[in-house]
Length: 529
Image 1 (cartoon, rainbow, N blue to C red):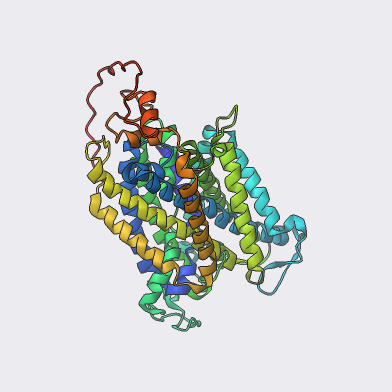
Image 2: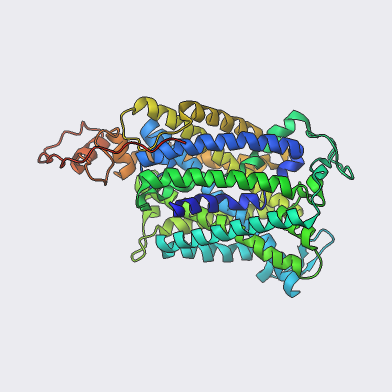
């Protein structure tokens, strides 16, 4: 259970380090606070729904497997592709911040690799201290660890997640005892975005519209927690571990998000400064301990811990997601090849890294004149676009599974039920519209939308004719009536399923299957909530 908790928190924890703060610049403190509350509700609805669906369909496919059983091959593909885009682009967002920070640490701590301009950005960097170079280095290192094996992955995930939370706790305590907190700085920007010295400005400096513009950045507090089910097949007891791990992770992240927003924004500089900061948590550390000398760059190394946690765990997510879609024939079959000794999806891991790196480099080239925080913000909106599409489809899947497959075993039932899934789906759809309100980031979002459309065309022309048998497909084809493929008590033969997959009735000339041995009745589901 703790490995799954670490996976969920680790994937998201960098969202408390940076990214969220751009919402201060679009909605002010009050706007981001309201947007954050709405997004917390959305993610609770999502997490509770996933906690029910995952142990009922404990496959590596995660969201794709839910949608496949609820809405057929097209639903499975549309959901899987959206989630795949999210998981491939999100590491590009994180590695963009990692490269920018590490480049500054090299120059500031060691005095080599370039110099700082008036804005604090590195100029004159040689190739070995350029952003694309460091992005490549980080991808090679952390994809490599994921290829080593699931045991090493989970061990590293839990360790780096605990360290990341430790850094946050250290920050909160340092802020509290620093004597520098000034809560009037929450509102130190005017309706025109100008500084109000001393604070005390309006709670909603940009009006109600600022709340909607802040939604994509509020999502960053929680984005990617839904990856927990991707480790269901590796869990010792998915019926118990996935719900407990996912829900505990969401509780952890809500507490971290509240404390981050409250304390970080109340430090010197306030919402006006942190709303445009590339590294708000690091700038908060600097406000507490000072920004002169080497201290700031040593603190930057602490900041890197949270970025590494999310980067590493989301690499795991896109590897598992790509592998499961390829295994079932939705993606080209060569993507599901596994390492001969390690048995990890090394091809999927490498392919996702290539695409993510290419996206980061492309955005870097297109925004040469607005380097730094704007590159990260543009990539963030691209990832959020893909994420909210998958959320809409996952919540639709939850509702349809309740109606379509009411009798499948549900070891855990969502405390929020269908109403919670419906509310989460509506909030996700609202967020999808809100993404397009920020005109500066629309080009990147349009690019992701085009990629999504091209993927749909691929599936329409070729992919839907190449589906093969996989645990996710078996469960969907039998409507769950025969049990979960690969688990004790599963009743249907492979020949029957191959027949159904080919469009037949499932009646074959194979020898009859012996009845499964009797099993003890299922235990009562754990209490919801």
